[in-house]
Length: 525
Ligand code: BES
Ligand code: MN
Ligand code: ZN
Image 1 (cartoon, rainbow, N blue to C red):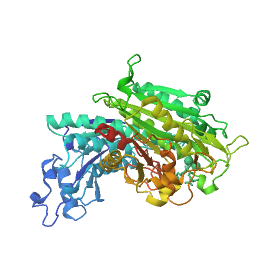
Image 2 (image 1 turned 90 degrees about the vertical axis):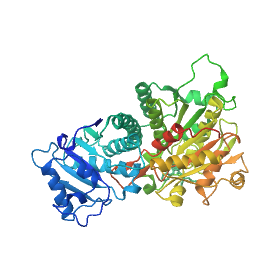
Image 3 (image 1 turned 180 degrees about the horizontal axis):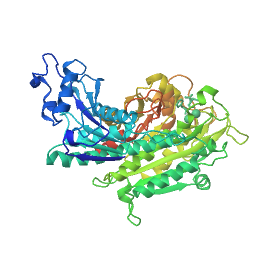
């Protein structure tokens, strides 16, 4: 979809639907004769006499007062260029924020789709708390996210829109809005890429295909790509990740996407988190890329296996985030690492009671082959630390069903060893509408994962399953290595559609982690 910023007057705006976003106003006393009581933005905007009369009528008859959730569809006469005019209520003007704008833009797009239209125009209300750039970014995000459909396997497809116009006035606003809209489009399209990867059927997206998808992203953006094959993983001693993969006919891949890779020949210092101030800092984003999770020999019951194609959503979010980071040309050095495997039961599958040797050298006692994600992440965490000495590591994983029990589908869990990093991620999530909530990680949790057979045991029992999974991971992170684990099990897919989120994969994590990095979330950890 094309997204543009225009100064066109509302009545001259050619589109299948023009959405006018209106904050709540007091409608008492409004009548055709007392137009002055109408909200100022509606009076000032040039709708033309006939369309304006239509708007006044809807309001005086009590059908619209800008309340949140309210909308009214009008069909102004022939001198109005757009085919439809949709009034969308935004609620209390003082409380209006980016998420309200995103939702309204999504609504405008959805409504246009429902009327088989291809072009929408959106006229935002005045927003006290946000500048034109932020308003345009939120609207562009909402429009692109709302336009998303995963219909590639349906013979009847093609409802998506072709064009969104955002209406702004004044040269300064116009320039700022163009910048914001461009940012919003990049972020939302990157989130949609993550949705596409997660939504794709697992027979069509095994680890090898996920790596090919990353290659397409690298070609599009200029990101550097490295794909490690099983022989290389073997050589590096990645026995934890390889154990998960060994039950499947589809071989593993370790996918590494790098933004602002230091040029070859340049020496050491700038890559190290221990380097003197002024050196460029590296952040590693790690994603769980289990392309299908059957549970392995500890097989999932039929009902629990449904939707396990989404078990690579952490990896998808990392690939989406790297795409956005590259296209936004962020100054930081960012590395995305995705451990891509399939967890299947077979004669070659890893067993319960097996003892594995991880890349770090620590041995692991297998207690449940369905706890495969932490094994994949363990080797990825080691790879990140030894290859890049990052200033921070953030991992995304649909790691535990227990996380859905703890936080439902309202938030992802944030667990780590660095309170600053965790707090900044929670804040970035609030700003982008992707909610994270902290859970503790104490020495007792780490202690709990000790094994009688090996160095560490894979699982910690029913109690605090999300925390014990994180405690397992912590055994593969150096104590002085800032690290944050995000369990997105409850957020990666949804049954509850909204105007910006159809059912299925959400692409959760992309916008918030880019915001974290963009807003200097790595400084002084
Ligand atoms: N991929 C699942 C976690 C999951 C469950 C994600 C439901 C999304 C929805 C993970 O690999 C898993 O199976 N975890 C086990 C861990 C247990 C065996 C300790 C779980 O949560 O049951
Ligand atoms: Mn599992
Ligand atoms: Zn899993």
